[in-house]
Image (tube, rainbow, N blue to C red; front, side, top):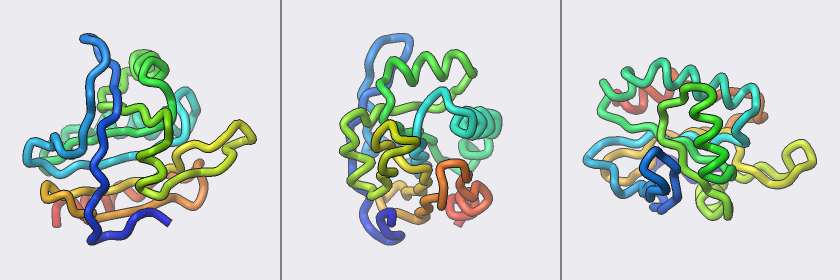
Length: 156
């Protein structure tokens, strides 16, 4: 069960790979914006690729709602960068290789396809004040979050 709406979102500092090298991604560095936090099981998988290509295509809708989008998986930042480059994904991707943030948000998916624990597919809207406004973990890794509900939470 993911952390509850109304609770304070756990802050984090994760690594992201970009053209300049490794960078820190922190929830608290939100610049006065809301954050859409999208946990996903693994890069280079069909459903994850489709989700992040779709979110990239609609990124302007989140920007119009004064929100930034961060994707989090247990992949290394180098694998995330290769996946993003291969699929033209423009969302900030953050590596939770040690699964600490996945555990803090209580969205661990145990033994995905027998390969080990990963992040479940989950979505959070975190207000600029650090409070969780929306929380969802999908029933199965093949299910996508309710993006209409995410946008409604941002608009509300």
